[in-house]
Length: 315
Ligand code: HXC
Image (cartoon, helix red, strand yellow):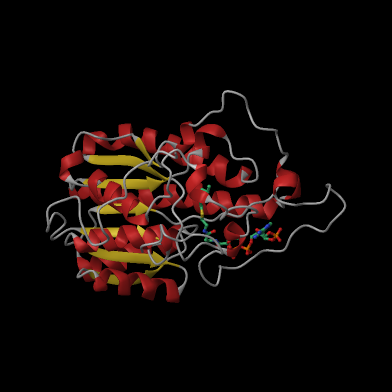
């Protein structure tokens, strides 16, 4: 008989923290209009925060604001491309003018697509590193430069990935950038601790949601029997990440800084006593041998949920 696995979480709408924990607090969530970022923004809103949803895409911004408001929170949208320091500064200015000084920053915005390293164009590499690593740094820097002279404390959460520790075949750009983000988190926690600014990492596991990009959703086998592929016996729910984010930025995590919290039911720690057969990444991605095909074309955002189980989607 299959053991039951990890229990399902409390229902959507429940909060781990006391109501009003983020009353009078201003929270920015980059990429807060889709997927896990939207779930995080929603949970901060549910706990009383005023939430700034930053995104390049106006439809995403509107979706994030609507989700926070539906949970009873206050939200506003600000256009931002986190690759551009000026764009960040004006978005942060906009949020501060309308909501007040920023207390919390969740660096969630990311860019990613699967591609064998030898197929990756220089611009593809640069683009992902620019969004994931440079964008995260620029946002952290901008907030610190507001908090430090104002003698205000604050909390930052940088969303990471477990392949920061292991490497990520098929995702060389994103894995290297996320490793940089983990390292940056540790450095900034030390540099800014004296100013009362905590900096932590937060790493999601397999948490299906309706906003996965077409390129990510198209990874062969991604939606096949997910529940039996993880030690938890089930996929994660976006709200399980959101509860962790609100905890890490709360006063109850007041002595936690420089830590990266992995919320994946121990999936990244799994090992086989005898490894299954090794499959090169080109084969996993169903690519013909190098040189026998044109490089793949960029793919846009997925039109809806993937073809497989989506019982984890709750944002
Ligand atoms: C190969 C690709 C590609 C693909 C884009 N490129 N998609 N190469 N395969 N599927 C190449 C382009 O050809 C181009 O290089 C370069 O990348 C930049 O592409 P643009 O479309 O011009 O860039 P831009 O419009 O800025 O879009 C950035 C993006 C896009 C990253 C490509 O997908 C995006 O904005 N994504 C945001 C949302 C997202 O990716 N979410 C997933 C996060 S999931 P050339 O040489 O042609 O100019 C995540 C989870 C981590 O991070 C953990 C997973 C396990």
